[in-house]
Length: 222
Image (cartoon, rainbow, N blue to C red; front, side):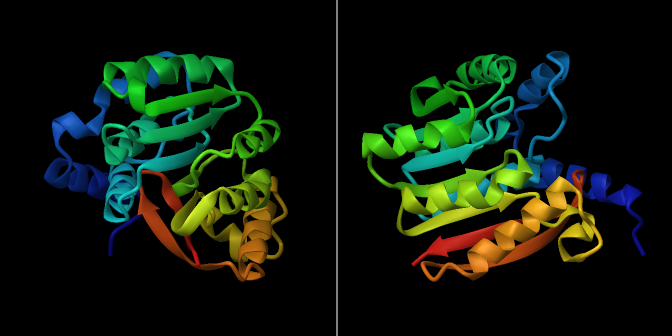
């Protein structure tokens, strides 16, 4: 029986076997660490999963809420291809500066529209632009706002789009009524909102790995 300490080594194995050096963005992760960013990026296998999902549905227009240092942003920018666009929101100006440098080094600047400020204040502005609807949305920001972010992503997405929300299992706290921290409450509010929303069909998948015990919620817009 594998122990928790082995989850990281299995992620390393997956990365070595299935993710090339060119894909892995090791310098982005190193730059994030040097700049003092929290080590809360998606793992390399999770980043490639986002890339593959975006490629599978032919996503050309992607919304990301929570840029951090641009690691997941670059995975998604690779998926949209030339002429595609990732619109990404980051509340922290320092994080955004690091992300811009990382995205530029990866050659993805032309595909990324990075907007700095509180997403819940800026999303209505994005809605007012009446740009083309999104094919995929990835939400990985402050957890108490997940239900509100999901609502905006749904309004801004086309039928058939995917909405993916990270960190929804919270080491099982989502299903533990005695857990009252903001992350657990935010996760449960998200599940309640999605369950009550007839315009989507959804599931969630638990994950273990370098990021511990957590998981994604994945919804498809009807």
